[in-house]
Length: 393
Ligand SMILES: Cc1ncc(COP(=O)(O)O)c(C=O)c1O
Image (cartoon, rainbow, N blue to C red; front, top):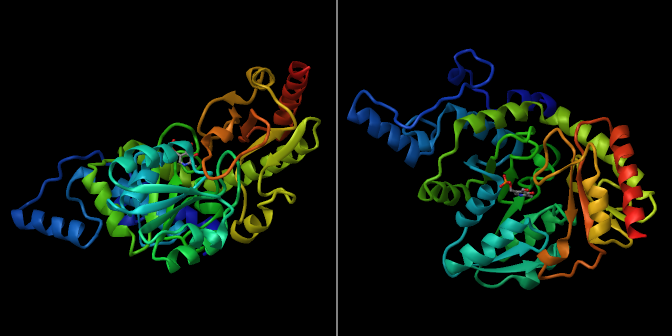
């Protein structure tokens, strides 16, 4: 089955749907049983054998199972654990893979709040983090310690867009006895499959392209057979319960993911290509561009590029960046991305690095290219760059 066909049906189990195309929203906490034996059997099958059976709302309903199974079909792996947000998925993947006394390696380009979790909460529980140069590749072996149990990648990082050599990192990590988790949100399971590239855990902030409409937070953690029990245990121990309405939105979004991503990609390539040629633009950080430093690895490991990239100017100032951003008509100012609309934020990654230095002029801008006509987006940016130049003087 071709990928475009697969995503339409993935996870859909007719026995759960009563003939309805989308698995309905099952609101549930209590599930009732005909006997104590039936209740105990459900517990045994669900908790001990990992079967998807109704036992208690927090442990999942058919609404959850459809999304879990769909993501697993696309991402590979044994099963997918849901999290209430993308950050929650990163936290769950880490918590499910470490114990007190362990050491983890995290890419220096990691999403800021994941860095914050490692430096704060995780440290308090006796797990040390070392951040590593995202371009280290197989040299990751040089920064591994005897107690390194997890290498956390994010490729490309979503402000600086370095592409990581995941197969090389995974080989070296496995050699040293560590597992590899990858935050795959930029590419989504549509454009990259970290588990096929050697990772043990693939993470999605489904909030972005999977939900796709900027109206729900959701995270997914897809695990191999070996890493699944730890992540499932963390999910249960932390008392997580994933709201079914948001799960429904994520599954509904997933069905149109390929169509939307194709449009995001086509428009992003047009807008990025135009931006690259403009005065004052030093670099456009977008791996699908042929002259991007990460292009070769991107072309090897990814089947496409999403709508998120950054722009670095040859010189910049807060005033000039604000003049550009504040006057935009189609690009609205706000965090997150992956919805149908275009977004813009200032980008200042240097303060969020510890293993490497980010020396490009700041602020740059980060753009999410939505589903509007790219010609309109280019016109909006053209006016924005004129304001930028005027403010720079
Ligand atoms: C790469 C990446 N991972 C995780 C997250 C967190 O997702 P959420 O906002 O749903 O917690 C984000 C959010 O911007 C992100 O960019």
